[in-house]
Image 1 (cartoon, rainbow, N blue to C red):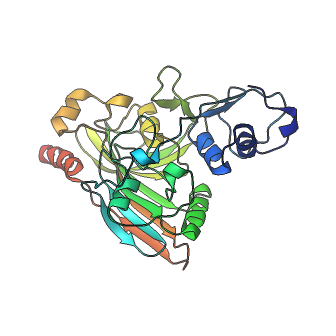
Image 2 (cartoon, rainbow, N blue to C red):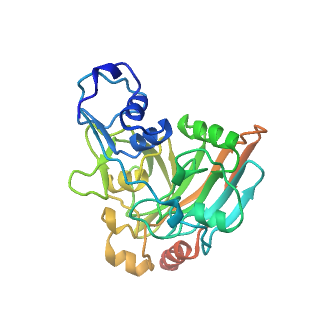
Length: 303
């Protein structure tokens, strides 16, 4: 639909908020998720709109929170918490928050089942959630408990002051062994549930370095500058070195079976950030879960 002339000059998130009656936070989340295109391109939330520009937006149906009550989540553990925030070790098969099409467990449900009260800021189904991990990715995730923490942590992620370290086991041996992938990511042109490196996508930057080289795979440390959906998986697949076990992005099923993997070998290893109240630097690390460690043990036995 065309952008009304009366909204010309406004930020995109503000314009969407006014056009569709959404909160500005909800509008910004839709932009960040790649659910908005402006004249065919994936825009930034701060982009100024022009009257007559063509806007396409996919708005999910409202999530019925009554259908997502507190739910005990096996394997969800707390690594650190205080009055402002809680840092969890997210297990595989758990989403960050309820969403349309997902009926599995979520971090927010698991925390509620533990009796923890989290921030009420954010869209109703995402209250307290300041960043996310894919359901198939394990590791460190921080959730805001106080309203102050929500505001400060959301800003920290937006301004890229949070240190995010991931570990990824990939097929083959990247050449060079360390480097930077700077390639735009957007919706896959032919698959609704995938993303890809595409012209007109959102700026995406991934730094990697090889930690250990095995016969058929390499263990990498990954540092993210940006936080796009599936960013690591998409960028590594674009290098022709997909995460082991990642069938969605082209992993070799023979190697996956050999390593005993039923999901991508990708783990949010550590998270570092300034505490929203004290300013103290907080750094939290998660060990590799059993299935990922098993894959490494198989490779180590071959070396």
